[in-house]
Image 1: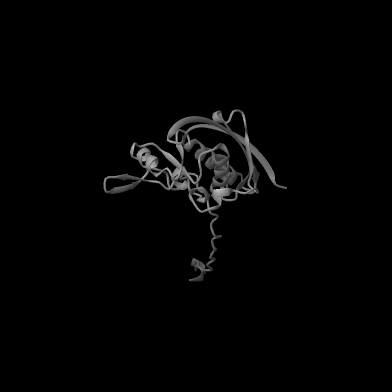
Image 2: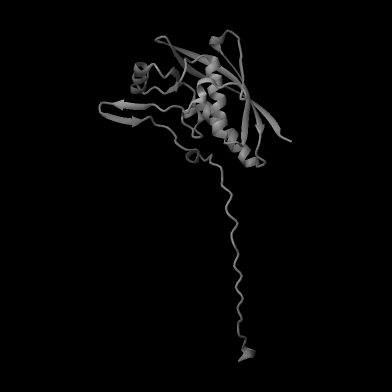
Length: 198
């Protein structure tokens, strides 16, 4: 029998639309099927989800075609979350669902999401992982199991630097422990001479 769990999250992030920047408050509910029998792996998977959503705090969601704005924001040290569509709530919901399944690596499966924001006028966007994932079918950071939230680099004069970010879960102490191969035991038979043998 597969157990199911649900968890509510909220975060504040910016959205960049038509040359304007708006701050938005998001509330989301994620529903998961528990696929690992290991309590430790379940906890690590949920901690990864919590970390990732908290890392979205104060980021700017922006369409990848807004290259000039992306460059200006990154040069100013603003964290951006570059996505392949305009950052409507439905797109953010699908991105979160896809990324949650990437980072939990099968220990938890994010089945459903409900996402509402201050800008949505009380409408909650619902999405199931079995539904069409639209632009997130394409390969990108959203289906990478690492904690990263963008592929953007920061350009300064002639030097290109990656934005400061955590590149692996192990850096956060959230790596899954690989089960070690069973160690082979070698038994050595030896005959020790006692004083009476001499």
